Image 1 (cartoon, one colour):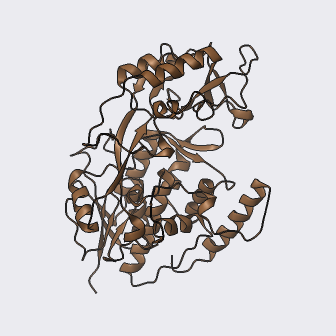
Image 2 (cartoon, rainbow, N blue to C red):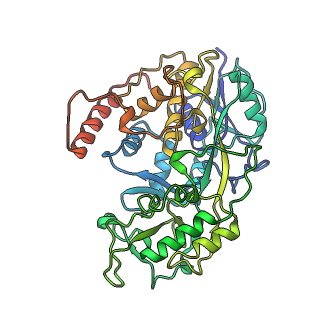
Length: 436
């Protein structure tokens, strides 16, 4: 029998996870990555699984949907979770990683796997007779985007995403800022920049009036995804919108004078040496000079050195409910799989999770095995079913959340107890899956 090789397009989180799952099952992989020969607008290094928007993989633990998804992935031998756990940095109740160390570790593991051949080329054509996983990501090149458009028979959907700026730790004025986590959870994992009412109003007004950079891609009025909205867009929605959002002051007291701030800007550690911090929730499309001016109004950041300014870029996703099955392969062309944010799952972990299941499904197809049905009793299955539900008309990107899970069938008022029941049910299904 001829040995089949699966072609994977894109070495982001989803592509690397898919490659790993295929190789674990003895299937050869050709992993195509256009970097470093050709770079996207947001990526800066040649390493795989590069994190762009944030170094946070969000909440850890089983008492929220994304934390439960992480645990399911760990149980299924996820490469991304293994590397994230190995490179984590303090972030309270969240799982955050040392950005460069994480990507380097993923790259090392992929390149050292004998069954994975890395090909440094841009792919611009898709052969529907070959087993292929398209994990080109939200920053897919024009060449592969056109190939996907032809394959899917229509125009792709798109929205614009924004990344937060990063500042040097030693440039933060700690006589004004202070270290703490809300309600004392996680110790001193965040740097907090407190504002009184006058400071907040002046900052918010300057933010709203600041000049944005030009939006390219030929779109004058880009859709802004609610889950990663530029801080200036959020601020324009109302005087207190950001004060009840990323600048919420709850659970924090300034150790400098014992006061409770009117608003608080938080910064989270971005690398292992704690020399860089990103401004939490401050994804932005302001011009670089405007970022320095306006964000310099934040107490403690008056003389901040910006290691990276915020940037805005295009995200692309397909109309998955009309095109894909819950195994992430195409209904019309079963050998072609999609994985990552291009499917409409939103978030680093969700992207990796889709790559995990697409990789398992593709491996089973190559090996002549059936892929077990994974249901919405699990986080993995909830995402797979969300992106493949043909009844969805206005399809929008979605983070994992308990709202897309199968209902428990019982009413439980306590949120923690309810989440525990979701987790118990999920693990029972994951542990009894056959053929994976």
